[in-house]
Image (tube, rainbow, N blue to C red; front, top):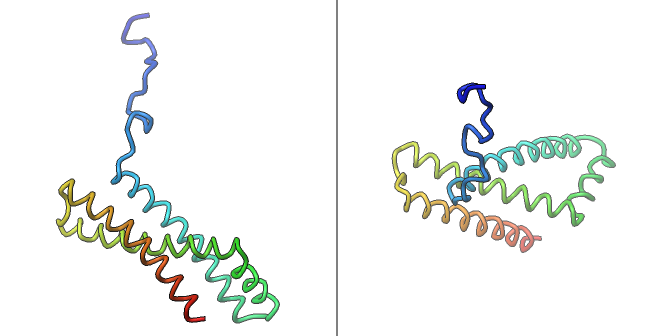
Length: 132
């Protein structure tokens, strides 16, 4: 068998194990994951709205779940995904306009997205519980 016909034992393109995770790549993957989580959350929101307009026992089931520990964790996670996707989407709009494309600016805006997400998520939950 000639060298040209021999199977290659190495990958033809680099795999994720070759690269060290960078903030920009982690934020990009997180943006996609939060988009999927928001889609699932939207299905839940529509089901909750349908239950609110329907029978009382169906709504009571949703109300019970929303006040349970698992429900609160899910709603907190959905809130986090909402703010993260919003702030990272705004970051991408600036990139589309040609701003913040330098590496130091991309890292600074990425850190701002993460900090802003945490502050907005915790702040909205603190506000919601203080209004009860």
